[in-house]
Image (cartoon, rainbow, N blue to C red; front, side, top):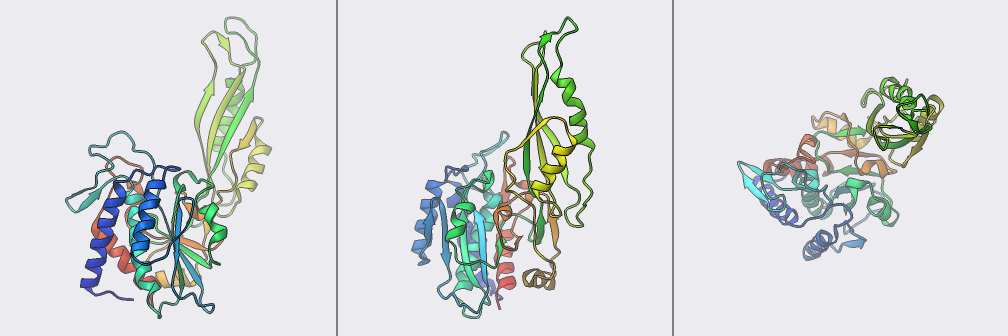
Amino acid sequence: MTLSPETLGRLTDEAVALLQDLIRIPAPSREETEKADFIEEKLTGWGLAPRREGNNLWCTAPQMRPDRPTLLLNAHIDTVRPVKGWRRDPFTPALEDERLYGLGSNDCGGGLVALLQAFRLLAADAATPWNLVYLASCEEEVSGRDGLERVRPLLPRIDCAVVGEPTGLQPATAEKGLMVLDVTVRGRAGHAAREEGVNAIYRALPDIEWFRTHRFARVSPLLGPVKMSVTVIQAGTQHNVVPDTCQFTVDVRSNELYTNEELLDEIARNVHSEVRARSTRLNSSRIAADHPLVRRAVALGLEPFGSPTLSDQALMPWPSLKLGPGQSARSHTADEYIRPDEIRDAIALYCRLLGE
């Protein structure tokens, strides 16, 4: 579907105005009720008959034909909390120098409103080759169980999905997964002035070095190697006591060639510490290069890539790709922004990618 300049301009103005309203409503993860209420009222006012589960809202196209595949259009409504360094009120949208500043503008407000506008157009067009479902989900920033995971069983059968995360409008056809490990090393307390006790910090050092230097064998052409980083360490109570416990945290970013369970098994076989995974459910994901959605994107001149950042794709059992306005590097930063022309280009691209 190709849009006239007049139609595209109107849709963009509506999307930007809606995003400004959304920025004004704080919605850190697990506190999205007010924003979900607002979106529900807006969708209802547009005649879209949204359904709601918790703070997740979804709409289906008026005509869901059994001979067509079903495509989910998904973006999240929650944000991280404002970081230090904002020079503006993060909840007051500011349009300056062709940039719309505000918390959640880039991650993932731009994708949220652009996908909504595309859904409104394409769902009403009988020539659209997909059954469409639009989902505004919550708790994405914390991978919470009351977000996409909660609403997933209530959705129609889904064949594939587009996730509106900021990708510079290039298709991320793979993304890394996440596993957070809590590692505990035990020693024996003693007086630091005497040769007694077993220092848990010293016992931890070989395992920390293993996490720093170990390389997993399978390297992905799109996502590269599995990456492990020791990010937090805690030990000791005072300067003259040999610590009997050392605990540290490891951030593991998996590629699609391993499940998190496989990585955890290899880690446990190589370190001497006690290792506990907070969760293994956030696996890496990938959509096949010959999937019709990917082929269509390539035909439009887009360039698939692998994304190092996690999204709700990790919780999707069906093929999906990330494609949205904005840049990932702006996410979770002070003075986060998106450009209205990026939203305009996203609406146009979604209609070309998904329309007849």
